[in-house]
Length: 138
Image (cartoon, rainbow, N blue to C red; front, side, top):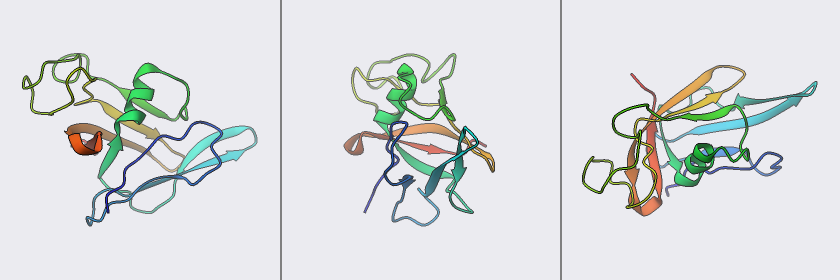
């Protein structure tokens, strides 16, 4: 069973954002929204979040266009040059992103949480899932 991180708009009262894979040490990230005294923050809901997660393309796209739908503590920073800084033709790089889609390779996905800040570097595209692998940078 393979699931991935999907976006939830602000005000979502459903389950927390979760990524859970059937591979050990890959894909677990649980975040909660904590609201107190008018402050709305994210909290890491687990002791050891995974260093490698699968992130849905729609989450990255929403952050890229700055839709304002997502929690302000979740941000995406694209590289200023090289792979991922602009679109590219198929085969130019090895990320295998869809033709005409935005390439997020080498972008940094940041979760500013109460306990700590989690940063993931986007790497390879998973075509059949329309998602991207991301891992902690070295």
